[in-house]
Image (cartoon, rainbow over all chains, first blue to last red; front, top):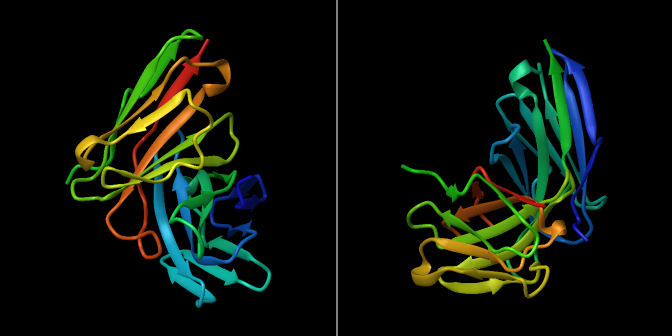
Length: 112
Length: 115
């Protein structure tokens, strides 16, 4: 089974609020990445955090990684209607071949 | 620079028919991946090419699925014969560097509906 599990499955917030979504995984990882998918489109890379990093920022995005708990969170601050999309975490394992494992995603809806 | 392109964007076929999906990665990207998403479930890994070689095909569901990447450029994914459970969105992604440092660039997907 896929190891990336995002939580919550769906999230609805008002514009201007912060959105937090979580990702749990099972194996040791080299890095963890977050992607966004707008409806009917392909996935777009947002941010990458390496296993030796604990926090990373990019614009309104903040990602944390806790390797002891095998979990990551993505925080979107001051959300906008344009942030409405599905968000996926992807992990790259330290062992085996270099395949990215995605989860089921979090559907975020930002209400204007 | 052109992104990852996939064709067709949508295909509707009858059970038992054959469908071939095509992916053109970004020029110069050695890594090419196929993924599938079925009915809002996880985006499931199918296989990974490095140039023309299959690096990992552990996610291929069964022998009805055949992926090729002749010459290390574009790739095709053939489903023959198609079954109802093959319906879903098939994504292709490519990257230039080894996965431990690189982001994936995705196409917009090919939606397959098997009736």
